Image 1 (cartoon, helix red, strand yellow):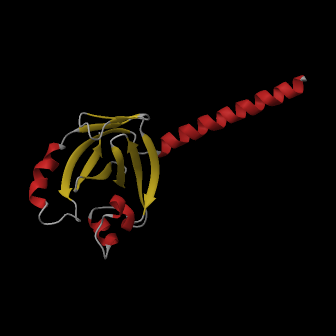
Image 2 (cartoon, helix red, strand yellow):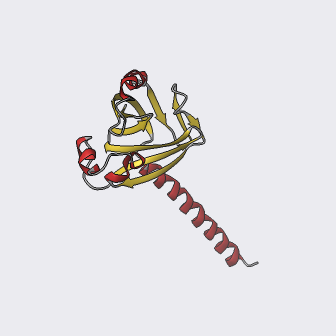
Image 3 (cartoon, helix red, strand yellow):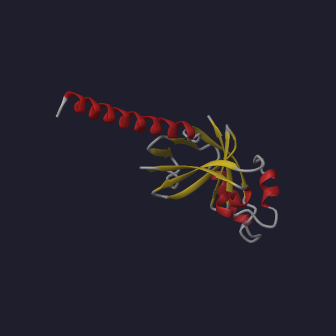
Length: 159
């Protein structure tokens, strides 16, 4: 092989490596969920039946003030049902009718989403795939994200 061929192979390899690093850095940059959060409030999910409501208040309080950290490869929290290693993140943009895994009641999911403080149109979010399950976090704004868990909608605020 000539020097020119070796140089071309090295240049191609360097280009592929740089592209991979750029893609990883860009993915981390777009994942607005990474960082430290705290469960700051909760409300009963609007799809919950009347019979289920009385028992949910105590469940909701259990997570208040609990901290959660979304790291590139793990979700760290003392609440074991949400913690995991080898986490997978997927950036999302859902219309109101798809929020909370399409759980908002019909006929006007957009009005319910607006009442919950979400922006009009597509709502940015992150799906978190853990060994404990798949969790969808929906951004109200840069410092506030909502999670539906066991018929309760939790508000998390950035620390």
